[in-house]
Image 1 (spheres, rainbow, N blue to C red):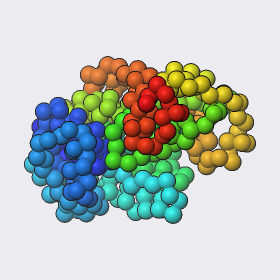
Image 2 (cartoon, one colour):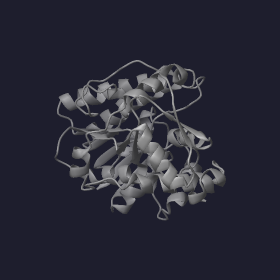
Image 3 (cartoon, one colour):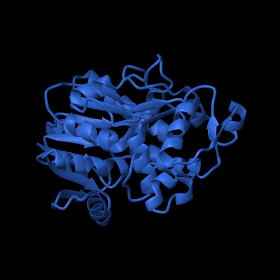
Length: 324
């Protein structure tokens, strides 16, 4: 099978590139920067030449060229930024780009067409688990709003019977990236402290990026029609997360009860709602259909992630002596 992949120079996309190649598929990449692609290939030990087209995901000519001869498509690219001054760009890129790519892939005859969404578009959950059957939650910050627009289009395609599969990852983490992804950028300062927060509800949902990539590659078979999959990974409440971090890093931190009012002074309101309201994901579908069956232990994920943060100079080794 020949698979078109977007986002291969990003954190999740880089791991997807490796997983798809390792699965024996041919691959065609849409990239904005060929030099960055070579760096990502080197990081992941991908030595073979790969077909690619240079262009943006809103560039119809480049998208169509990258899809030529492809049997399947995985859309993992998105504009993300922690800089408030740049976040509005997400609205001009993520929705239009997803619509162009998903429509073009279906027109090309791709089956499946996999759209990487985000847990935030189905938050808050309607039950005690995150479910792909939950309604789309629009609005919010520009990134979330842009992903909701893309989500609504992907669901409209599913309603027509198009072979679109939507995946909702929670907190994707793991080693190997060209820079600091969003979760790593939050994890590093969390560890650079003598204290950790304990909130009245919620916690952490962490999924290993390597497992997520392998699972998505495992879904690359035609004929199963439109489906939605949650990839929540391992859920930990605040006390459980503290215990795992203590074990993995070899350094104990004081666990401090933190009221909502104090939390709201540190992070934006949408992040507060997720931190307090996150629940486990209903991951049975993706684990079964991909053949992955189970996520790796979260201790392994965090050990590898924190060791990578230390190795790359994003975290001083004294904060994680077991990972240095």
